[in-house]
Image (cartoon, rainbow, N blue to C red; front, side, top):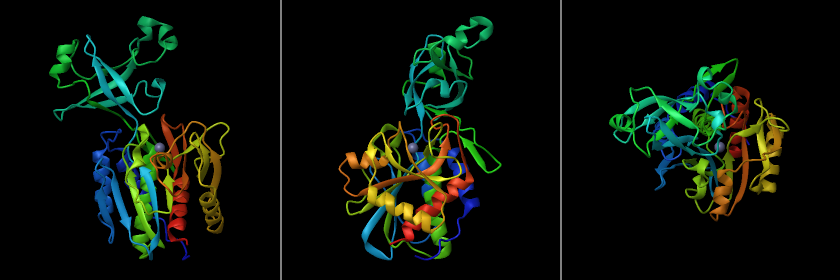
Length: 350
Ligand SMILES: [Zn+2]
C-alpha cells in the first residue's frame, strides 16, 4: 500500500460546516444531496447517479474492477413535520427520527411550507413561562401533546396560521447552531454529516494525490437512514465489503471519545463482520491511526439496513466520536482526520 495521502483538513471542515447548515431532515434532504453532488462534481473520474428514492451513488474506478467495495454515510438528519395546527395558532409536531423532546426544547426552527415560504419559530413547552406556571415548567412531561412551535408571526388562531401558508405535513428543520473553536465542531446533525464529510474528504485526498482505490469503490450518500431503510437500496450487488461511516456513541461507559475514530463491533442489530473488523484494526495499527473499539447500546446503522434488505457482503462500521448524539452534538477535528485516514487506508489496501 502506498503512504496515505495528505488529509485535506481545511477542506473537510469547510465542507462539513456548509453541509451542517444545509437543511436535510429525512424526506427533505434534497438540498444536502445536491450540495454534496456539486462538491464531488469538481473531482475527475467519478461516476455519479441517483437511486430512484434520491440517494447519491458515486463510483470511483479502482486499480482492479473485481473485489468491488462500497462505503456509505447518511446525509439525512432528525427533524419534524407539522402534525396539527392548534386553535391558538401554534403547531403540534410529529418527530422524524429517534430523539427525545427535552433535547430540542427551546430550539429555533424553520417551517418549510408547501408554497416555498419559510416561517421561523421556536420549540417550547406549552406551559413555558415560569412566571405563570411556576414549578409545572420543570415537572411537566415533555411529549407530543405538551410540546409546540411558537411561530414568529402574528397568529392566534388556526385560520391565521393557515393564512401564513403553514399546513399539516410541512417539514420543520431544527437550527443546527454550528460553532467551531479549539478544534471542536459543535452542532446538531454531526450524525452523520461528519461521516459524509469524511467520505468527501477521502475522495479529494485521492484526487489531489493522483491515486485510485485498489478496487472499484462505490460511495452511497444515503437519505433515509434515520428512519431505518437508508442503504436498503443503492449498494451494487457485486460488492464484497460495505464500510459504514457513521458517528461513534460517546458517553459514560463507552470507549469512544471525540479525539479518536471508533470501530463498532456490535450494536442493537448484533455483531458486525468479524474478519472485516479485524482487517480494519490491523490497517489502523499499521498506519498509526488513533482508534477505539466499542459497542453501542441503542444504535442501528445503514449496514444493518442493507443486511436486512438482503445485502450479502462483509459489513463493518467506523466513525468519529460524537458527544451528546441526537442532542446538541460535538466532535473534534482529530476524530474526523483519524476516520478519513482509516477510510483511505481501507480504500488503498488490498
Ligand atoms: Zn447516523
